[in-house]
Length: 40
Image (cartoon, rainbow, N blue to C red; front, side, top):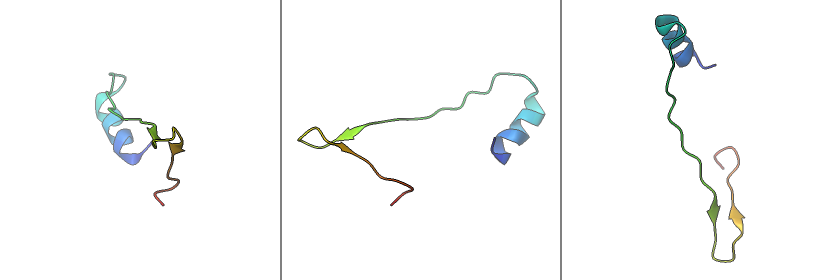
């Protein structure tokens, strides 16, 4: 757990924390999945 969420957890206790996120699969015209590893 990141330090950011640890600090929030200390303040909120067992209350639910919403953590918005996004995921996507990007394909080219041929249907190949395009990927990037470690921000490269």
